Figure 1 (tube, rainbow, N blue to C red):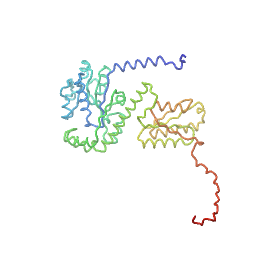
Figure 2: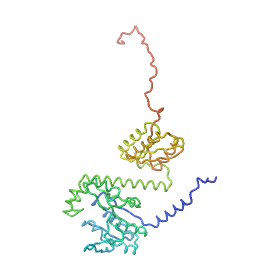
Figure 3: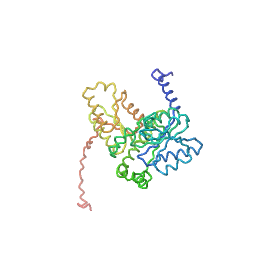
Figure 4: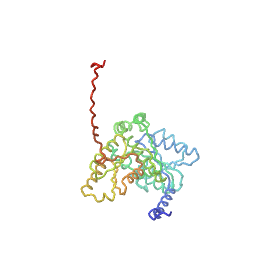
Length: 379
């Protein structure tokens, strides 16, 4: 049997997919060492990985590393070749910056470029270091780098609201999300505070100021939670991309995301609120969808408006919302759940299926028979 025209793959789509794969293969790989704040050990972990690669025979080059006076980090540089920094004159001062042109000319297989969110000195080709890294990746050079959660553009205001400190240097989330690997470097808040007190994060005076401001325990706990959640979101995207690439339909129960299905019947706002509460209890994300069949397209305007209000309520309560088209509500909902790796779906009950107190069966009248041979105590 030959496939119908609707089943044949689109040649333009196939060509675009092949071209995208070719571009991806030619592009360098980006690994980001990600943490909640300075001092958790991102640069140290990056250097440890680089030393291990060099010991196995792979050439490694240091582009720029910011040790901030940390002796443990500085010791990890021993035995690793570093590119001399480029000196720039600015307002009577000489500033050391990453030498992008020298690295491009040498074209190493792997380069370490610390502090992705750094702002370059005036006179540099790019205003931001993450743009330097993008040029290296386009040239086919693999890059290891570091970034803190407060430097992600989407979380910049959230971190500012928690800590009272709004950092000026940010990295677009697209750079973080497109990285080939994200390595979370995580330590408990108490351990980080002990490192700060021991002079392993900043020098004494700077450490004292930090402990009274940004490095308060509550701040560090909140930042740690943000870093963990952002990493989990990133890994969820990786899982979804892998499932699409390998055409995997079966649901992997790697998360507890919920899906609420809403429709024209009364009571859907209750389904939305119940799902939101359950998602909050589970500490997970959730989705709310409306599936419009050909029959539902003829709904009165009042009912259609009510559906949109219900979806808006779901969005306000934190859901990812979508309006889908399909001939079969159940099949479309299942397809959506599989596509987003959701294993739990919540639905409202139609009125005729609502639980009600079942009527008691007619009570049988039982007559007690008098037994003259027994007294009232049965003896």
